[in-house]
Amino acid sequence: MSLKELYRNKWARFGFWAVLYVLWVIWLGNYWWLFGLVPIFDHHITRKVKWLFWKKEYKEGEKHNVLLDWLDAIIFAVVVVTFINTFFFQAFKIPSSSMESSLYTGDHLFVSKLAYGPRMPQTPLTIPFTHNVIGRGESYSTLIQNDYRRLKGFGSVETGDYVVFGFPHGDTVLTKAPADDYYMAVRAAGRERIIREYGPVIVRPSDKKDHYVKRCVAVAGDTLEIRDGLVYVNSEAQTVWPGVQNTYRVVTTGQRINPVHLDELGLNVAEAGFLPSMPGYPQLPLTEKMVEAIGKFPNVVSVTRNVDTYPPDFPDSELTIFPFSSDFKWTRDNYGPLWIPAKDAHVELTMDNLPLYRRIITSYEGNELSIEDGRIFINGEETHGYTFKQDYYFMMGDNRHNSLDSRYWGFVPEDHIVGKPALVWLSIDGNKSFPKNVRWRRFFKFV
Image (tube, rainbow, N blue to C red):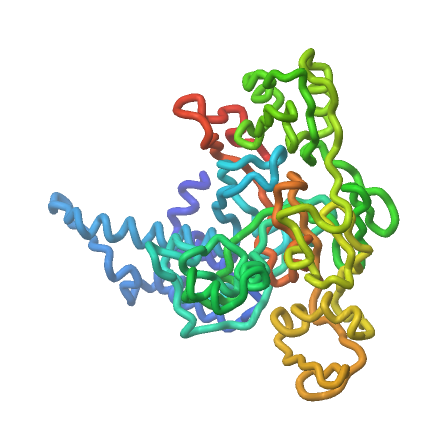
């Protein structure tokens, strides 16, 4: 008997789907869902209930109703795609150049949720095929809010991984400037002015924050430090991955470098700003491989790495570098040392280190914090320490001088992790016209 003939047997067909369903319920960890075996049994064996009530069964020779057929196809697509997006893969587009030259602006990715385990929906009432916006409004309702829960995955976040996560500061969004960091804008210009000019604000739940993608450079329990642009973890110099780039001061003989040559190097030409009075490029983003190649160009006089020392260079300031305190003399290139909080780890709290952990205690872990006469109160009780409820991570973009990352908004909570980029299925260069804008070599490229 062939497999096709075996599948035609209603008991074999029921057994196949029942086993798959039971395995899914075990993974889900909610055994109330075992009642779902009842409609599966009825659909394949007893056929007492018309579960696909919207689907018309045609008699031989009967004319098909096009509208009903389309309705059936749409419902099927919504159910299947929603199931896949929730538990397996989700589409994602790289919106900025913060990961050049590893992931390019215009890359369309499939993000694996199995890598770290899929999050169960905390805000389930969402319009299908949307994340948080449809048109000019929000595409979800907070009428139902579930607690955070993550299913088992193939592993956990490791140093060096590309990670897609919810933007930590994305809980409050300015309606007229939704892509901006609300908290940074408030620190720079004041809350009243920002809301007056760019408000009102929208408050989003954790799973409806905008998605970012960065590289994880330190995991929970690590101590991170950046010295002259080089990352050190637990006092050891970290691997400089091939796609990591910094900006360099490139002095020329007075001529521009041929844009064709820059494009051949893989450089984002839109970021290659030439300054005739220099003459050259004051901030050219280059990888180590690009530095070696560009130094050999006949019209290049020198290539010098840009390194920010304290105080931070414009537009950075003490108001933009985490933890936003003048007590921490940090810049994007000289940062830390900073310990990354871990689940169940206990830290002694003082007025000196409180800026590092304030947002964790309040926003990410839901406590009330106040200061009275130099004393720290959590949920109304004076405290001298805090025990963390989840793991945290430190993320950085590979385009180190053009990336708003953990250096600007701090730690990424474990419950914000969405998944790991798995495959580039389409890549479009927004700086070029068709057909040159299509990056054919990146199609179906595994990340």
